Length: 378
Ligand SMILES: Nc1ncnc2c1ncn2[C@@H]1O[C@H](COP(=O)(O)OP(=O)(O)OP(=O)(O)O)[C@@H](O)[C@H]1O
Image (cartoon, rainbow, N blue to C red; front, top):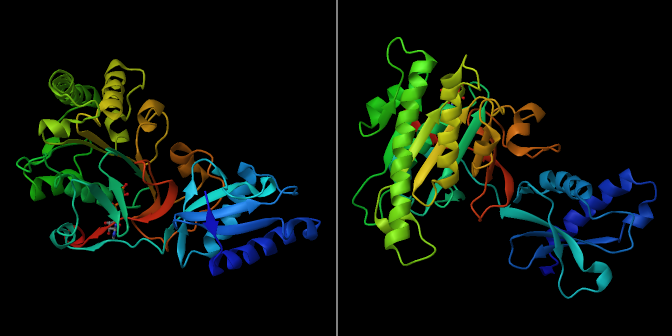
């Protein structure tokens, strides 16, 4: 990587210098032992350590620097917190300065999308990406979404928004709409909303008097049907398509989106070891793992993504992870692991939190404010 010195780098150097000098016993050994440069394509910030130094290029230093720099530049850059620390080679530098850290950033701050759905949606191309904020879009290759958050944090609004966007996705020749299937054990606001807003959405709901042990097998039967379709699409790609790198888009089939609202309500009171629950997790794992090529997406919301609610094999396949509401070690641990330092967050309120998007175009954890769809709040 290569970088250029800008006035922002000089400012960041001063901020970090003051912080490090206050922390170390011998300030003179720290000042002048590092340098900041903007990555030459503008994708982020380079921290270059001049060896020998009291500082180590390790994850502790990386995240300490993140925590110092992110708030200091938050009005002009959104510093993204990578999930692992980014040690990079700095080109055209003498040996003692040829390695450093890379901090990806976004210019300015992404903005919440606010408006009526039709006017907002007319400005995006959903076959390319799903917008989460103005300036933050999920590439369509990421088809698995996990949304968690405490009660009242905005999960249902986020779920409704994403269902609206999923229903805008189509087959390649734009002749068929996506198929959306919602599983809602609570038969709550989401199902009522879906029934009134979009009769094409298929609702898999508990019937009167259903216990979980009656309802889960019906969910499993529906999921098995979807997996049969997935397998048939994979077969067609294997038999008929000459391209190696391909997806079911080339078959001109419509996307299928499997959406679970508050998944914990589904298995409430059931033993995680019961056959029905085990079958449910096995089917969901298959969809999470194999759905992308066959254009089958998965979205799950949950109050907390504990291992007994969303088993690790499913959770680890979720490429877009959104945590809304209270951000603390209890809530972050299941989604983002050992996230010990703070991330500068937006002002808060419903629908705000943090997100990680693993679509090959985003690097780590960023603050998020989910869209406000005005007709949904009326
Ligand atoms: N993105 C948003 N923009 C504006 N207001 C929002 C947004 N998300 C949520 N709200 C407000 O917060 C309220 C609660 O949100 P929501 O019902 O989605 O929370 P929840 O996490 O699903 O809660 P619960 O777990 O209790 O169902 C909404 O009725 C709405 O008024």
